[in-house]
Length: 242
Image (cartoon, rainbow, N blue to C red; front, top):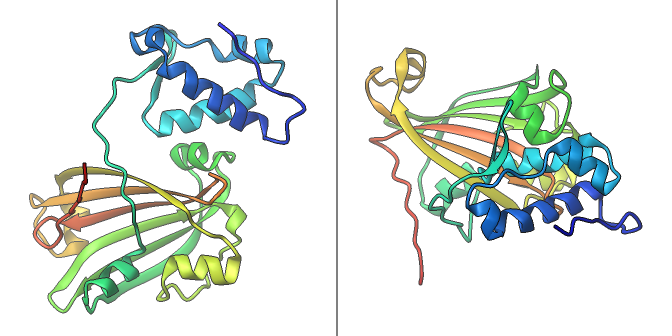
């Protein structure tokens, strides 16, 4: 197994490791269930720190490509059917494009400590402060989506911003942060009492959960966003061309 990186390359080492691992997990032996090299062994072989290895494996795990089990090791996950969308927008742009006059029923922002999930995605220390933005949005018929957004500290965004503006335009025009790529995950469940109260539905009503991981042109994380949509008001449509 030929494993090496270029220590003299201007490409960051964690990105080189990430590319190396992506190539590994495409090989037949690892697709068939063979465990990937242990992080500590890979770090020794490549002559880099274990934290650099972990930075790469965290991203692959968040993408659903690998799974890590304590006492077992890291293996490639079976491939799931995924659709890559060619265009994506902020909620404001989506609604404007469809001619929907939406209403902001609630907008609140504050600084909160990053939990383990956010810390892994943003590659920051758990407990670091990040800006959390919550928005309850809908139309004249009432609210139909609850959003929670979290931003990488690198963006510099503060809780005092005018979040009625289109979010990605605000990031680009004021904070020089351009968003390039969005990876999305869709699930569904019953609303539950807390969410039902926010969306003015019953606890047993279904909601569509849309998790969005947003990256800049360099592949660096910018935002984690999760939206809870009332199933009655929202349809997620995907057009695929062969």
